[in-house]
Image 1: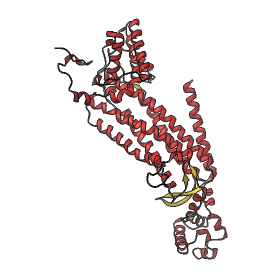
Image 2 (image 1 turned 90 degrees about the vertical axis):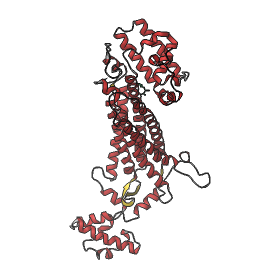
Image 3 (image 1 turned 180 degrees about the vertical axis):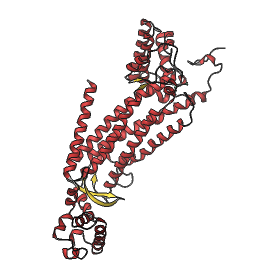
Image 4 (image 1 turned 60 degrees about the horizontal axis):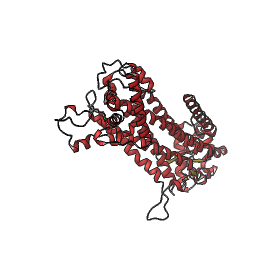
Length: 471
Ligand code: ARG
């Protein structure tokens, strides 16, 4: 009886059930790893050559064949076949069709287990670099916008209630900080992505004297993985990517939520360009911030992807298990979603038009300088807790009379505390309140100017580092 027509067909006497083929294939999605698989194959050829397992001529022929396949993949001419199960066997089979039985030597000292773990790390390193660059663009957009709107005041909120006035630039730079930390996390994860599984083979290593330092170096990794069982079976690096992406999406979602709120007529703080909004099929007047809503919404699937892979990994015994094939789709979906969201968030920030008068007017609503009044009383010698109480009563009075704090005549104010003098009024303005918050990290204009300068410097430094990395 003939072997079945699969690279692993030797011990099988029955063709694979159609449903099994459909259920177990991964080429429909892992074809994304095709170019990484080629790179990895090329490095493995070098290791086989260096170990004397391939002659020079054989190594040349294999490499040439792989390069031709690479061209076909790049040009979209390569045909992936489901019956060949995954991207690895598709490429190996294509090589066989191109150069004949010599292709069969390529898989010496290697398994798809170390192969896929290597490809996936190569892929995630590339995605991480791209995400870092998109995060940089978004951070730059935030800094540019903060510069552009410098001086505009809006109410800062806690509990979504007016709290204290802040500079819009300060608010935008808060997001700059969040996305800078996200970038730091992705950069940090590159350290753990920089470890090469190749040479671990199926799980135990290989009898061939493969130079793992060489393959790691050829593929741009920092070093080979230390333990073969670990190298083929953990996916913590993918989970770390998913977590970092989830966290970044959380920040994007909060930014989106604020844009959505601020664009509502109740707030009316900002407008977005038409090009970044969509309309309603029934209500002709609508201009909706759907992009922001979808970023908020897509955050859900990114969280889901993290949970999905955590759950896949839970309880898996060492070493490789086929469950691990489920690592790819959540990661691909996450990378796509995050990259699109970052691009669009950047465009939204860039396109944001603030409505200065609306923000300014809102900053005056809700007695946002009440804390300043308490601070004034503290300066006159009253303990803060008592000052808080006095001002609380003044606010209740203002509410009752429908007055702003600075509209209350001095005589009336003095009924609440004889410490209050004519100089109180300069403590009650929105601009005064902002200007006084001069502690490091506060919203006072000079502090925000410094923060802007630091952010600009950090972005410039990153750009310089990138330049030196490239050259
Ligand atoms: N497609 C597989 C995956 O993504 C490749 C590794 C297959 N290994 C195996 N022993 N069946 O995990």
